[in-house]
Structures are given as structure tokens and as C-alpha cells.
Length: 283
Image 1 (tube, rainbow, N blue to C red):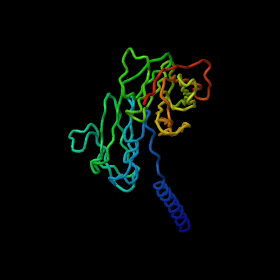
Image 2: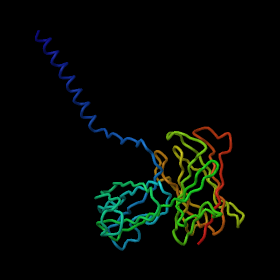
Image 3: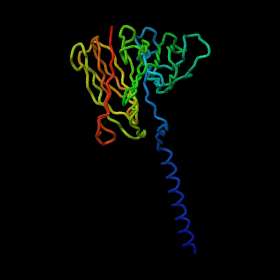
Image 4: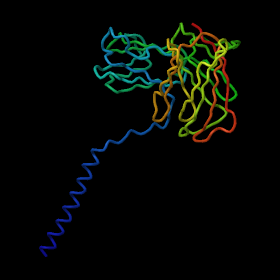
């Protein structure tokens, strides 16, 4: 009897110890954050390291952007040395349309710009940190795609151009490509080919394939002194919903921007899904 009681207690103790061990190990496992149910193409602005110093060259990077309306911008605090805020308006303005509150290192703020116009913003703690977002409603519907741009010039109905990039006003402009002749779900990767041809120079300036999750593709032209295009991005790669960036010394002149879908998922397209958009770059 005593032997049976001792054996029972030993079994119970072993089970209890096993359960407690599971609880302890379970607490040490970090659960990954869930993927958002709505995945919007997103443009990232960095709060750079050392932004608490007023004479630093750049605080928000990039400090000034031009985007299509409907674009979601995410500010990412990449500065481990200071706390910051991202607050719309000029320092001292009341009733901001967005305000992050105190942002610690690696914190983020997202805001979707759904109205055209320029919105300035700053850090309430470090008022020398300023930036601006210009949101444009310029767009053109093609046969297969709708192209929306951050054009800083209003396109008139009689304009011969579908997009305009004036590098004297701003050094970067974001494009959003929305397929309108096909529809896929947000889990399907789409392969795009983007080609730029300069009519006046009679030569191809740029051609490359890009990948996007779901439908829309976002890419940005960044004017620079580079003679060979430098492509980087996307800003978010898991899943691929962030903007790509194309840095180049774009010659002035008229352009044909060719947009084509070459694959949907792992399947190559059987018919041409292609549009051409006429644009102009000037300085």
C-alpha cells in the first residue's frame, strides 16, 4: 500500500513538473505580430540617428516627398538616442491632423493622405526637425492600368502629358500603378516590367522588373547625379507592399513610360497586359 502511494505521488509530481516546465518555456517564446488584414502600399520616412542635434544635415529622410493621394506614409523612428514626435503643421500650431505622441526607438506612425495639397510636419521636442508631404490627385486611366503620380504641377485636361516631373520643384516623385483590367487577391505576387524611353534622345533610360503583393505597384523617381540607375527597395518586403526607389540623373525631355504585367503568381501572362504613358521631365 505504501509502495503504491509512493508511486502515485511520484507520477503526480512528474506530471506537475512537466506542466510547469511547459508553462515556463511557453512564456519565453515571442509570438510574432499578426499581419495586418489590410495591406496598403506604404512609403517609409526615417527619423535618422542623431536627429536631436539641430545642425545635423538630415533629420527626416527624405524630408520632402510628392505622392499620389491614397498613399500611406509610415514614419519610422530609427534614432536610438532621442525620443521624438511626428506632428502635422508648423511648430506651435494647434489642432494637428496627425500627432504621434512620444515615439521611442523603432516606434512608427502611419497616416494615409487622402486629400490633395501640401502638409508640413515637425517634431514637437526638436522643432528644427521639419518635413513636408505633397499629395496630388493627378492620374491617367489607360487600357489596363490607372497611373497616379505625385506631380507637383496640376495636369490640365488638354495637357499632352500623362505625368510631369519638374526637378526644380522637388527632387523625387512617387508613382502608383493600379491594374484595372485584372483582379487578384492580396496574397498573389505580381511581376511588373517598367520601361522608360526618352523620345528626344531616342534611347531607353531604364528597364527593370518589380514585384508587388496584390495589385498596386509603387515606385519613386529620385533625381540625382548618378549616370547609371540605382534601384533600391521595397520599403516593406514581408510582404512586398513598400515603395521602390529609382535614383538616376534623368535627362530633360519627353518620355514614354511602359507598364506591363509579365506574370501573375508563378504563371506567365498569356496575353499582353501593357500600357504606355507619355510624360515630361524638366529642370
